[in-house]
Image (cartoon, rainbow, N blue to C red; front, side, top):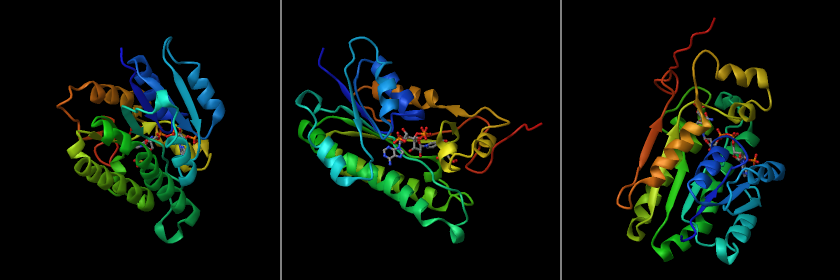
Amino acid sequence: MEKKIALITGATSGIGRASAITLAKMGFHIIATGRRTDRLEELGSEMPKGIDFLPLVFDVRDRETVMEILGNLPENWKNVDVLLNNAGNAHGMDPIQSGNMDDWDAMIDINVKGLLYVSKAIMPGMCERKSGMIINIGSIAGKEVYPNGNVYCGSKHAVDAITKGMRMDLNPFGIRVVAIHPGLVETEFSLVRFKGDSKRSETIYQGYEPLVAQDIADIIEFAVNRPAHVVLADIVVLPTAQASATLVKKDLK
Ligand code: NDP
Ligand code: 8X3
């Protein structure tokens, strides 16, 4: 069988990690990226038999390194079939007037510019081969805005717009561009947003059943498995208890 390759950013945790394992089980050879080497090693140990694994450690904010590493992939890893742009986080949740500018930089640099840098390295090969799928992880925060979500919402609205732009510009090349916009998914996301405050981050997922990373990985599997003439262009997925970015039915005792 022809070697199929998936590149997953942010594969050290949450949605990216679950998706890497799911794609590997589907038979894709896996390029997994993130900043935490130990986590990537641990992920590598979970690959099914016969699946090749290439861990790449870099910060998606580092434009030169992204282009250096992804622009010079080993010959047998060059032809990426599926790019999952997943790396990202929220940093802080403050009113805009008291927002931390380092948090703003992190969200815009990682969620928006990081996605662009990684895509810039991979898209030319897809265009040349006239095939490929790009899956961008947006958010309900890219469809709606909520109080204190300001810059995170802005970064995910940018992902939404960039995804639509990608779909248009890559249309002549037959490249499928998918956006998945999850609501509340229980991962390390809130721990990062609240800077390691586990008590605060746990409250985000209490009193209802949130999505889990595997729910998103299952959607990715479905999207990737569609026949070549079908693209799942824009998917919003919420926990049943969530009706909008701000409305969650909680049963708190
Ligand atoms: P996690 O915190 O569990 O995972 C985030 C991943 O992104 C990690 O693997 C992390 O790797 C990687 N990452 C973060 N910053 C960088 C960076 N500068 N360079 C390289 N990699 C980076 O969160 P989720 O799995 O929940 O988040 C994945 C995506 O899903 C994000 O884009 C997020 O915005 C989105 N999302 C999440 C939702 C949720 O409720 N959880 C809902 C909607 C969307 P490392 O730290 O090792 O670099
Ligand atoms: C993560 C989900 O609701 O915190 O994108 O924005 S939310």
